[in-house]
Image (cartoon, rainbow, N blue to C red; front, side, top):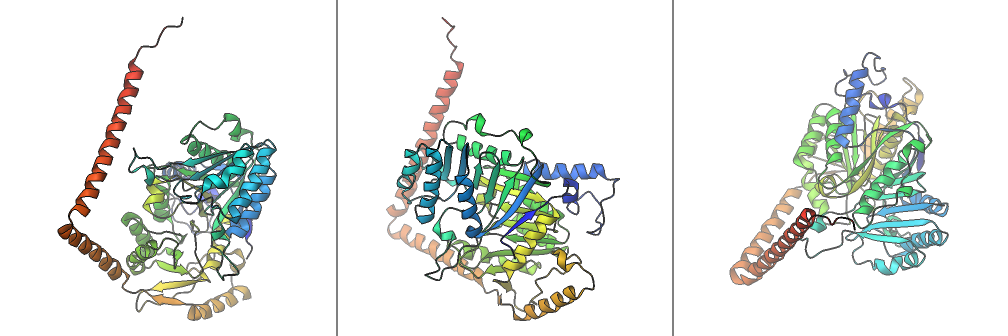
Length: 509
């Protein structure tokens, strides 16, 4: 299948068809009655309020796959910039890929382009970023590091800028899960395949929303972005007929969490998820289970091994209730699948930086694109089925392995919709054979390992507390003092700010 696909969007009402809880459940190919404009508006309102983002029409989308589909496109776009470049990424590694991007950015800065880069302190911890960005600084570019560690904020480091975006001159934008690092391209010499990831290229009025999201995070680290670098969407000509939402999540807003819950609640046929660091909350797991038990084909694709070793056992510990409810779980067989995507009912899709865990939903700055269009969603479904060919399905003991194609009446690819055609018959036969040959693995007692590990850690803590109590009490006392002084310092700053606001201003001389 192609690595990039143009997606054309029908009007928003068409995109919402089949995902509207207030409209009677109609066959997928049945048109929405023209007598239901109010229900359409209510559905649009529900999606906008849940996501905290309006629907923006008139855009063109290109689906990008893996670093091979991202880096050349990004570098070419950077080299064409004439006014401003805004690059925001969680990881900007000091390696061959990072240095190639810095060189391209520095060249544009020397040409008079305003180049601004925002990356996360924790994501780049230990990467010697000051040395990496020195050529860009010398060329006149500006680099900011998000949320550096501060002694007066013990818990402040939990908030991270996990976004990955790039905009060029306010005319084209990119939103993705891909970071700037050689890890994403793998190593052919060492036999390490590239990381699997997904992103989108956006042209049209929605680019304004991507730039505005960058400006929001940029302002947390210093002065605000100059107004002339934020385009006015009213002055951007439509580039296509794609309707989408730019969901710029900030700490404790939970917009994407509400939207993910809503999609799980209203999906009627399929809900296919890919996630790099899945640690679902009880409410979201229950929503997926309820959808599956109601006949929705729910699938979850996650890594078999992770760059964060603790995440894999935590994810596997949550498989059993999902599998028991009929949710299908697949593990990627490659080096790492880092994509964060969702596609529902062949009409709605999401691509971006947010993982299905509390860090992304609650505490991080994240950026995602939610698209309401059957053409784009079908391209996402095709990519998903292609990914499953390189995955192992996890099943419970005695659970039957099912075909990869949906069990519902609607097939995700238009070429397969020809009823009674030889193509359809051949696909069904091939799918039956593939089901028998496809790898699958019975879920073991993964919970026992985590439980044993937790028990051993508590036992070790108890032994240390009995024999060397100072090793336990002194760290607790030190942390308590640190936290107490940070609160007192913050209270003093607030008091000084309040006194300054009450002080009468001097009359002009």
